[in-house]
Image (tube, rainbow, N blue to C red; front, side, top):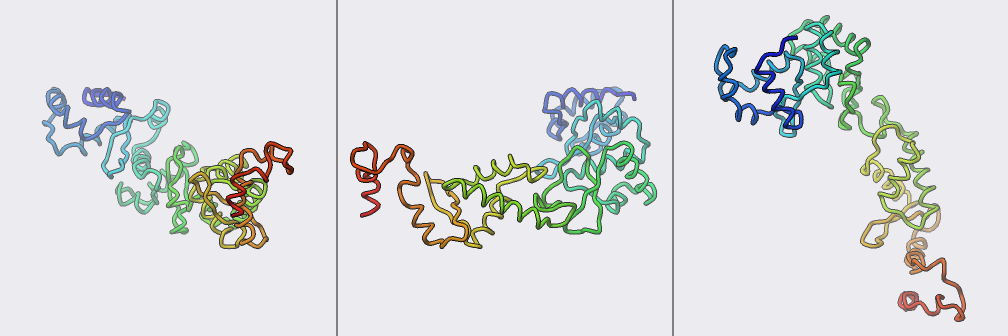
Length: 291
Protein backbone atom coordinates (compact mmCIF):
# COMPACT_ATOMS: atom_id res chain seq x y z
CA UNK A 1 0.00 0.00 0.00
CA UNK A 2 1.59 3.22 -1.18
CA UNK A 3 0.91 6.32 0.90
CA UNK A 4 1.15 9.59 -0.98
CA UNK A 5 2.27 12.90 0.48
CA UNK A 6 -1.28 14.20 0.94
CA UNK A 7 -2.21 11.24 3.14
CA UNK A 8 1.06 11.59 5.09
CA UNK A 9 0.33 15.24 5.88
CA UNK A 10 -3.26 14.44 6.86
CA UNK A 11 -1.98 11.60 9.06
CA UNK A 12 0.44 13.90 10.90
CA UNK A 13 -2.25 16.54 11.40
CA UNK A 14 -4.72 13.97 12.73
CA UNK A 15 -2.21 12.54 15.21
CA UNK A 16 -1.90 16.02 16.73
CA UNK A 17 -5.69 16.43 16.79
CA UNK A 18 -6.90 13.41 18.79
CA UNK A 19 -6.64 11.18 15.69
CA UNK A 20 -9.25 13.22 13.80
CA UNK A 21 -8.94 15.03 10.48
CA UNK A 22 -11.66 17.67 10.35
CA UNK A 23 -12.82 20.10 7.70
CA UNK A 24 -11.26 22.93 9.72
CA UNK A 25 -7.88 21.19 9.57
CA UNK A 26 -8.29 20.75 5.82
CA UNK A 27 -9.06 24.44 5.29
CA UNK A 28 -6.25 25.61 7.58
CA UNK A 29 -3.73 23.54 5.62
CA UNK A 30 -5.24 23.72 2.15
CA UNK A 31 -2.25 25.62 0.78
CA UNK A 32 0.09 22.79 1.86
CA UNK A 33 -2.00 20.34 -0.13
CA UNK A 34 -2.13 22.71 -3.12
CA UNK A 35 1.66 23.00 -3.13
CA UNK A 36 2.20 19.25 -3.53
CA UNK A 37 3.43 18.46 -7.03
CA UNK A 38 1.46 15.21 -7.17
CA UNK A 39 -1.86 17.03 -6.78
CA UNK A 40 -3.38 16.80 -10.25
CA UNK A 41 -5.85 19.61 -9.55
CA UNK A 42 -5.68 22.39 -6.94
CA UNK A 43 -7.98 21.85 -3.95
CA UNK A 44 -10.80 24.30 -3.30
CA UNK A 45 -12.63 25.07 -0.06
CA UNK A 46 -15.49 22.77 -1.09
CA UNK A 47 -13.30 19.73 -1.76
CA UNK A 48 -13.21 18.29 1.78
CA UNK A 49 -15.57 15.39 1.02
CA UNK A 50 -13.48 14.38 -1.98
CA UNK A 51 -10.30 14.62 0.07
CA UNK A 52 -11.83 12.36 2.73
CA UNK A 53 -12.49 9.70 0.09
CA UNK A 54 -8.80 9.79 -0.81
CA UNK A 55 -7.90 9.29 2.86
CA UNK A 56 -10.33 6.38 3.14
CA UNK A 57 -8.85 4.71 0.05
CA UNK A 58 -5.50 4.61 1.90
CA UNK A 59 -7.22 2.43 4.55
CA UNK A 60 -5.52 4.49 7.27
CA UNK A 61 -8.66 6.57 7.79
CA UNK A 62 -12.33 5.87 8.28
CA UNK A 63 -15.22 8.32 8.18
CA UNK A 64 -17.41 9.03 11.19
CA UNK A 65 -20.08 11.63 11.91
CA UNK A 66 -19.48 14.13 14.71
CA UNK A 67 -22.16 15.46 17.08
CA UNK A 68 -23.19 18.04 14.46
CA UNK A 69 -23.63 15.34 11.83
CA UNK A 70 -20.55 16.41 9.84
CA UNK A 71 -18.10 13.92 8.36
CA UNK A 72 -14.71 13.58 10.06
CA UNK A 73 -11.73 11.47 9.06
CA UNK A 74 -10.67 9.21 11.94
CA UNK A 75 -7.37 7.33 12.14
CA UNK A 76 -7.69 3.56 12.42
CA UNK A 77 -5.39 1.49 14.61
CA UNK A 78 -2.68 -0.58 12.95
CA UNK A 79 -4.36 -3.91 13.78
CA UNK A 80 -7.53 -2.90 11.94
CA UNK A 81 -5.56 -1.50 8.98
CA UNK A 82 -3.81 -4.86 8.51
CA UNK A 83 -7.14 -6.71 8.52
CA UNK A 84 -8.64 -4.25 6.03
CA UNK A 85 -5.78 -4.89 3.59
CA UNK A 86 -7.06 -8.46 3.21
CA UNK A 87 -10.52 -7.40 2.04
CA UNK A 88 -11.68 -7.23 -1.54
CA UNK A 89 -12.69 -3.80 -2.83
CA UNK A 90 -16.44 -4.40 -2.53
CA UNK A 91 -16.02 -5.80 0.99
CA UNK A 92 -14.03 -2.75 2.02
CA UNK A 93 -16.72 -0.49 0.59
CA UNK A 94 -19.38 -2.26 2.67
CA UNK A 95 -17.19 -2.07 5.79
CA UNK A 96 -16.70 1.69 5.37
CA UNK A 97 -20.46 2.20 4.97
CA UNK A 98 -21.16 0.29 8.19
CA UNK A 99 -18.35 2.15 9.96
CA UNK A 100 -19.82 5.55 9.03
CA UNK A 101 -23.26 4.46 10.30
CA UNK A 102 -21.78 4.40 13.83
CA UNK A 103 -23.69 2.96 16.77
CA UNK A 104 -27.06 3.27 15.01
CA UNK A 105 -26.18 0.45 12.62
CA UNK A 106 -27.36 0.07 9.03
CA UNK A 107 -29.30 -2.61 7.13
CA UNK A 108 -28.45 -4.19 3.79
CA UNK A 109 -31.02 -2.24 1.75
CA UNK A 110 -29.42 1.05 2.78
CA UNK A 111 -25.94 -0.36 2.20
CA UNK A 112 -27.00 -1.16 -1.38
CA UNK A 113 -28.33 2.36 -1.95
CA UNK A 114 -25.19 4.03 -0.60
CA UNK A 115 -22.62 1.77 -2.28
CA UNK A 116 -24.41 0.98 -5.55
CA UNK A 117 -23.41 -2.67 -5.16
CA UNK A 118 -25.58 -5.59 -6.25
CA UNK A 119 -27.55 -7.41 -3.56
CA UNK A 120 -25.46 -10.59 -3.83
CA UNK A 121 -22.27 -8.52 -3.39
CA UNK A 122 -23.64 -6.87 -0.25
CA UNK A 123 -24.78 -10.20 1.17
CA UNK A 124 -21.44 -11.83 0.43
CA UNK A 125 -19.51 -8.92 1.95
CA UNK A 126 -21.64 -8.86 5.09
CA UNK A 127 -21.25 -12.61 5.54
CA UNK A 128 -17.46 -12.44 5.24
CA UNK A 129 -17.11 -9.34 7.44
CA UNK A 130 -19.29 -10.94 10.11
CA UNK A 131 -18.27 -14.61 10.10
CA UNK A 132 -14.68 -14.61 8.82
CA UNK A 133 -13.10 -11.21 9.45
CA UNK A 134 -15.18 -10.63 12.62
CA UNK A 135 -15.21 -6.90 11.90
CA UNK A 136 -18.99 -6.42 12.16
CA UNK A 137 -21.87 -7.95 14.10
CA UNK A 138 -25.65 -8.20 13.57
CA UNK A 139 -28.06 -6.10 15.58
CA UNK A 140 -31.82 -6.28 16.16
CA UNK A 141 -33.78 -3.03 15.89
CA UNK A 142 -36.68 -3.01 18.37
CA UNK A 143 -38.59 -0.66 16.06
CA UNK A 144 -38.17 -2.85 12.95
CA UNK A 145 -37.69 -6.42 14.16
CA UNK A 146 -37.72 -7.85 10.64
CA UNK A 147 -34.63 -5.80 9.76
CA UNK A 148 -31.20 -7.05 10.71
CA UNK A 149 -28.83 -4.15 11.20
CA UNK A 150 -25.04 -4.34 11.16
CA UNK A 151 -22.57 -2.46 13.33
CA UNK A 152 -18.81 -2.57 13.94
CA UNK A 153 -17.96 -5.40 16.32
CA UNK A 154 -16.05 -2.96 18.55
CA UNK A 155 -19.05 -0.65 19.13
CA UNK A 156 -21.83 -0.73 21.71
CA UNK A 157 -25.14 -0.12 19.91
CA UNK A 158 -27.33 2.89 20.67
CA UNK A 159 -30.10 2.25 23.21
CA UNK A 160 -32.45 3.90 20.71
CA UNK A 161 -31.96 0.77 18.62
CA UNK A 162 -31.59 -1.95 21.27
CA UNK A 163 -34.17 -0.57 23.72
CA UNK A 164 -31.68 -0.36 26.57
CA UNK A 165 -31.01 -2.63 29.52
CA UNK A 166 -34.44 -4.27 29.56
CA UNK A 167 -34.33 -5.68 26.04
CA UNK A 168 -32.69 -8.91 24.95
CA UNK A 169 -32.28 -9.58 21.22
CA UNK A 170 -34.97 -7.03 20.47
CA UNK A 171 -37.51 -8.46 22.93
CA UNK A 172 -38.62 -6.87 26.21
CA UNK A 173 -37.17 -8.92 29.07
CA UNK A 174 -40.00 -8.95 31.60
CA UNK A 175 -38.26 -11.53 33.78
CA UNK A 176 -35.25 -9.24 34.18
CA UNK A 177 -37.45 -6.33 35.30
CA UNK A 178 -39.07 -8.58 37.91
CA UNK A 179 -35.64 -9.65 39.17
CA UNK A 180 -34.54 -6.02 39.41
CA UNK A 181 -37.66 -5.13 41.38
CA UNK A 182 -36.89 -7.99 43.72
CA UNK A 183 -33.25 -6.92 44.18
CA UNK A 184 -34.17 -3.27 44.74
CA UNK A 185 -36.76 -4.32 47.34
CA UNK A 186 -34.19 -6.52 49.07
CA UNK A 187 -31.63 -3.71 49.14
CA UNK A 188 -34.05 -1.07 50.41
CA UNK A 189 -35.48 -3.39 53.06
CA UNK A 190 -31.99 -3.70 54.55
CA UNK A 191 -31.24 0.02 54.40
CA UNK A 192 -33.08 2.94 55.96
CA UNK A 193 -33.47 4.88 52.75
CA UNK A 194 -31.11 4.92 49.76
CA UNK A 195 -30.32 7.31 46.92
CA UNK A 196 -30.58 6.42 43.24
CA UNK A 197 -26.76 6.24 43.04
CA UNK A 198 -26.59 3.78 45.93
CA UNK A 199 -29.25 1.58 44.34
CA UNK A 200 -27.51 1.77 40.95
CA UNK A 201 -24.14 0.78 42.42
CA UNK A 202 -25.75 -2.13 44.26
CA UNK A 203 -27.40 -3.43 41.08
CA UNK A 204 -24.15 -3.11 39.13
CA UNK A 205 -22.36 -5.18 41.76
CA UNK A 206 -25.09 -7.84 41.54
CA UNK A 207 -24.26 -8.28 37.82
CA UNK A 208 -27.87 -8.99 36.90
CA UNK A 209 -27.44 -7.04 33.69
CA UNK A 210 -24.72 -7.65 31.13
CA UNK A 211 -23.68 -4.33 29.63
CA UNK A 212 -24.41 -0.80 30.73
CA UNK A 213 -27.02 -0.08 33.40
CA UNK A 214 -28.00 3.58 33.54
CA UNK A 215 -29.80 5.68 36.13
CA UNK A 216 -32.78 6.24 33.86
CA UNK A 217 -33.44 2.49 33.64
CA UNK A 218 -33.16 2.00 37.40
CA UNK A 219 -35.51 4.89 38.09
CA UNK A 220 -38.14 3.40 35.77
CA UNK A 221 -38.11 0.20 37.86
CA UNK A 222 -38.34 2.20 41.09
CA UNK A 223 -41.34 4.07 39.68
CA UNK A 224 -43.10 0.73 39.22
CA UNK A 225 -42.50 -0.05 42.90
CA UNK A 226 -43.80 3.40 43.85
CA UNK A 227 -46.97 2.80 41.84
CA UNK A 228 -47.40 -0.50 43.70
CA UNK A 229 -47.07 1.41 47.01
CA UNK A 230 -44.03 -0.65 47.96
CA UNK A 231 -41.61 2.29 47.87
CA UNK A 232 -42.01 5.98 48.62
CA UNK A 233 -39.70 8.96 48.35
CA UNK A 234 -38.45 11.45 50.89
CA UNK A 235 -35.73 14.11 51.05
CA UNK A 236 -32.59 13.75 53.14
CA UNK A 237 -29.61 16.11 52.97
CA UNK A 238 -31.17 17.73 49.89
CA UNK A 239 -31.23 14.39 48.08
CA UNK A 240 -34.18 12.27 47.04
CA UNK A 241 -34.09 8.95 48.82
CA UNK A 242 -36.23 5.87 48.39
CA UNK A 243 -37.67 3.98 51.36
CA UNK A 244 -39.06 0.48 51.36
CA UNK A 245 -42.42 -0.14 53.00
CA UNK A 246 -43.29 -3.42 51.30
CA UNK A 247 -46.86 -4.42 51.99
CA UNK A 248 -47.15 -2.15 55.03
CA UNK A 249 -49.55 0.77 55.13
CA UNK A 250 -47.59 3.44 53.26
CA UNK A 251 -48.86 6.35 55.38
CA UNK A 252 -47.52 4.66 58.50
CA UNK A 253 -44.14 4.06 56.84
CA UNK A 254 -43.87 7.68 55.69
CA UNK A 255 -44.61 9.03 59.16
CA UNK A 256 -42.33 6.51 60.86
CA UNK A 257 -39.41 7.52 58.66
CA UNK A 258 -39.79 11.15 59.74
CA UNK A 259 -38.79 10.21 63.29
CA UNK A 260 -35.39 11.94 63.85
CA UNK A 261 -33.80 8.69 64.96
CA UNK A 262 -33.74 7.32 61.41
CA UNK A 263 -31.41 10.05 60.18
CA UNK A 264 -29.34 10.44 63.36
CA UNK A 265 -25.63 9.62 63.24
CA UNK A 266 -25.65 8.79 66.96
CA UNK A 267 -28.42 6.19 66.85
CA UNK A 268 -26.03 3.35 67.75
CA UNK A 269 -24.91 5.23 70.89
CA UNK A 270 -28.41 6.20 72.00
CA UNK A 271 -30.00 4.45 75.03
CA UNK A 272 -33.16 4.87 77.07
CA UNK A 273 -32.82 6.43 80.49
CA UNK A 274 -31.64 9.80 81.81
CA UNK A 275 -28.49 8.20 83.20
CA UNK A 276 -27.15 8.04 79.67
CA UNK A 277 -25.56 11.09 78.03
CA UNK A 278 -27.28 10.32 74.74
CA UNK A 279 -30.92 9.37 75.12
CA UNK A 280 -34.32 10.29 73.60
CA UNK A 281 -35.28 12.33 76.68
CA UNK A 282 -32.32 14.70 76.18
CA UNK A 283 -32.63 14.87 72.37
CA UNK A 284 -33.61 18.36 71.15
CA UNK A 285 -34.56 16.96 67.73
CA UNK A 286 -36.95 14.44 69.27
CA UNK A 287 -38.45 17.18 71.46
CA UNK A 288 -38.96 19.43 68.44
CA UNK A 289 -40.52 16.59 66.42
CA UNK A 290 -42.94 15.63 69.21
CA UNK A 291 -44.02 19.22 69.64
